[in-house]
Amino acid sequence: MGTATVDRSRTALRDLGLIGVVAAVLVWAHVALPPAVRTRLAFRHETIDPVSLYTSAFVHLDVAHLVGNVAGYVAAALVAYGLCVQVDHRRWFRVTFAGFLLVLPVAVSLTSYAVIGLLYPGIEPVSRGFSGVGAGFAGFVFVALLAALNRLYDYRVTGYAGLAIWLLLLFEVYLIYVGTVTLPVAGLFAVGWGVCAWGISRESKGPTIQSRPSSRAELIQVTQTALVVVLLVSFVSVLFPPTIVEDGAVTNVFAHAAGFLYGIGGAALTARYTRAR
Image (tube, rainbow, N blue to C red; front, side, top):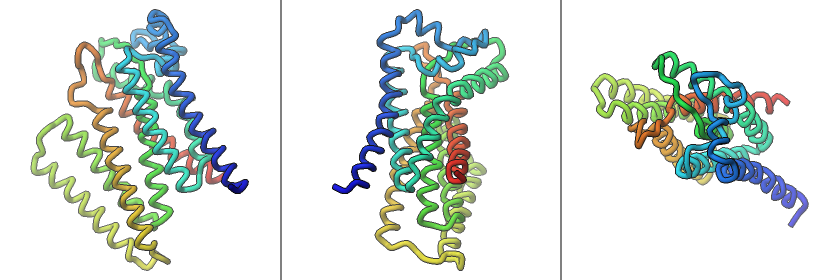
């Protein structure tokens, strides 16, 4: 085994260890901290406590809440890391990982506070859980998938593919909360996907393409893309359940939406920063 291979293995173990450490901290906080302490660390919307804006992400209501959030975070972080490895940009993952841990808990808490206060004045819920940060890593997966596609295809093809995936996720959310599809809505989505399909076909054969990937490389990329899209669809179904209130527990879909969008924006920003460096 060569030195380069050993170094890559050590780097991978270190990076995967970072993902595992965060999961371990979440489990430790739930197991080791008394319920009264976890309650104090949660974010209460009746007052803005700067400390709880951050700490609320690391405490959970019960074991089921903890397991769901940890599993979602680990799955999204691992897929994002795998895609970063594929595009040979591990530093992008590390910078984004650190940024998410430092910024997302507060950003998600404040956004959730503002949206709930605007839409439901007088309601003062208690927010807690890592799902907003986990949603950020799901957004990272979306951006990292586009980066992987961009390694093989022209950026125009990647843009059309990204738009098609985004429309699919929007349509899924629409189905979750509306349930029925009207003809105008179906038509809008059909036109959107049709334009994306036309654009992908046109740009992949255009004069700007200097060389086409091999059939084997293309098949692998298409298969990988399909699998990641299925994973994104699964993330969306978990982050945006049809029943928001169940057994007295409320799923903060606003925090999930904020985390996902911040994850996309943050990953795109760090991609530019790390590439420029």
